[in-house]
Image (tube, rainbow, N blue to C red):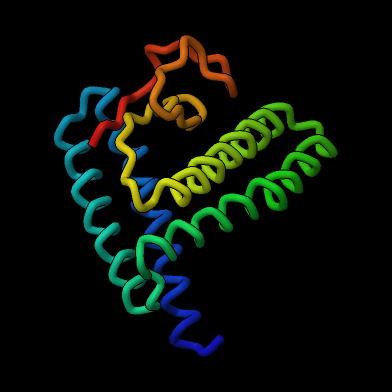
Length: 165
C-alpha cells in the first residue's frame, strides 16, 4: 500500500473513531444536564463524520449499492467469524467476564448484520420496505418485527429504537 493510501486509511479510522467517541460523550453530557456541551460534542462529531466520508471518497471506497452491500456482507462475516472469536478466546483466557460478554454479544450481532446484508442483496432489485429495530444495549437489529426481548442480550422491547426511514 502506498504512503498516501495508508495515510488516508489512518485518517478515515481516526475520524470514524472520533465521531463515535464524541457521540457517546454527547450522550453522557446530555445525561448529566450539560445541554450546550452535548451540542458541542454532537457538532464536532458531525464534522468528524464529514472528514471520514471525504477520506472514503478519496480512497474510492464508495462503489455502487450492490458492490457496497457485498463488501459490507463480507466485512461483517469476517469480523464475526474471525475477529470476535479471537477476542472472546482472549477474554476467556484472561478471565475477563465483562469483555467475554461484550465480545460474544457483539459477535452474535455482527452475524445478524451479515444475514441482513445477505437478505438485502437478494431483495436488492425489489426494494422491500421494512422497519428495523435496534437494541440500544447490544446493537442487535430486528427486521420488521419488534421483539418482546432482545435475542442477544435479553433487553426488553422498550430498549429498541425504530428505524423506518
